[in-house]
Image (cartoon, rainbow over all chains, first blue to last red; front, top):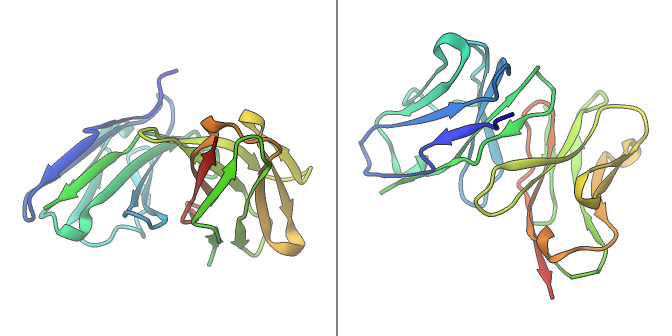
Length: 113
Length: 108
């Protein structure tokens, strides 16, 4: 089966611009997660979708971040406007159920200059 | 609150030597615990997981981990490290809590 894919692999934007990251989970996985890793720090949970519903968005840093999963398939994470501290690697993962093994995508490296 | 601690940021071992990466968790009930590995340019790959039962868990690539409730630990081990094991390793709970990662360097 195809794995989790993320697009783009790398994005460089200026402070104040908008960026949209996309994640395509494994087909049939209702659970989709977004994480962020700032350089040298731990991987931090952002939010968790079950199908199209946000199950837990307690990790979203602020209202400049908007995640959607229309139709319960792929998900997007928009950052608007981007700030310097948003730089990092954004990972997406999917699983069959909460607490089950998560399959990770390769990540999107976001650089805000 | 749940948390996972990986005390070692960076470890260097010689090829062929044994390896142990430490992971400590903080969780009231029996946790679900995972070890993931991330090679450069790749996503995180699951090495092994512990849900319940036998406290010694076998994973892929010759790795194993032992769950010790008395020490709140879930350390990852490998008896003989290969150069291809150089990567970053993450311990995690099922509830989206990751450690900071341990970077492994393998010397020839």
